[in-house]
Length: 40
Image (cartoon, rainbow, N blue to C red):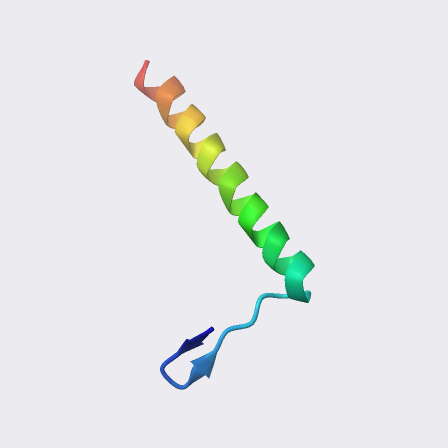
């Protein structure tokens, strides 16, 4: 993926990309649960 004159490549090829996606999904779920707990 290119942004301007910088090229961004996920670490570890396809597995690194998959891991980054899974980690981001897990973090968003945890943040949502945490926000719901704080609001109550």
